[in-house]
Length: 500
Image 1 (cartoon, rainbow, N blue to C red):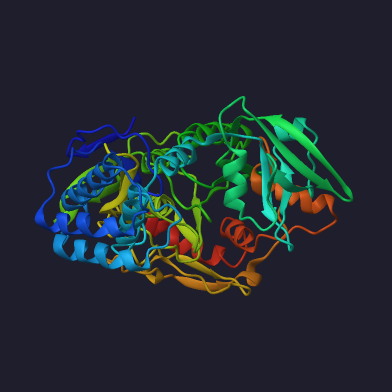
Image 2: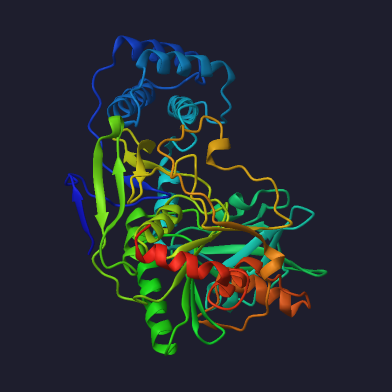
């Protein structure tokens, strides 16, 4: 296990998402005069007939939430201003649940979003789904879905060896009803919610296949969702893609890295692909970075007033020691992905190729409340080995690859109520290249089972479409070869070895 120091953690870390931890919180105090103003005001927004017990439950929720916020938020909270804002929101509240707990929960959620885009109130159902997302598995039927042009639920592909695959569901089938509920026009999230449930419980899907319509009843099962894929490129370059950091990602990564080492006798390089990785469990991201580092700080956290909270130190380096490394980032790489990339570069382990990352460098904790649900609250910032903060800045690549078809994209700093930037890494890109300038044909041998991306690619091939080429990956291969990026290798490697 990692050596994690600075200050001991006095509570159990259960889950985290995009840098989130779950901690227990203290019980609420009696309402203050400020809190009482809101407790009196929200009653006029509640549906008539609510019981005193319901009001007492909702009152407790608000008081407890404000207490936790005052004690743990990354900045000092102005309690009077927070209560004033909560009262002001009652006039424009958008919620279908006008019970006491529904109104208070909606006000808390809006008030927390006004602090920063990542703080929120979570109902019990939301809390449960968050746990599923970090466990790397869920109870469902096992299909990849999308919306078609007519806003119907389209099956992209069934996942191998799942209830959906065994029931004979096919790519391009449409799901018109779930347990009799009309799904046309409904969002993807609603379809996901209705298909997930307890292991063994049945769910009936109404399938439209060309002109036929029929019902299929399947029993939900535990669906394992891989977060890691790997390949061998041109027979001597190891490639591993990590799409998120959950409870199973480290084991998957170690298994693939071992296979890559066993299969490649004299590796020319290793590519770690963190593009479109939104983050996840910080412990998982730090542990995976540790697979490539023998020593040094990986990441640290600091709270209110720049108080140091926790650090993660490397002690492992099990794989590809001294093999040149390229880390791929893009604008969708966030949180743990950014921190892992910065740790590898700042410890002299590899260079970063791609785009400036998203810039999400704040830490959230999930705190279950005794009154039900929980709060997701921003409690600190992550710092890199060189004490930089990626919040708002992102991670600048050493070699930036410019994509001709790149669209406008909001990063963290563009989000409403985003926390300000702090302690920016002064690095600038060594070079900026057009992606088309280093495209090349590469040979890819995929390892293990197909991932979601591979399923979609295989589907395109089966329908006669030509898969999109990955220009950034092709450029990265050129770093280890004789392509345009190889011109920078002799400049970069001595700097890495010197720890610069």
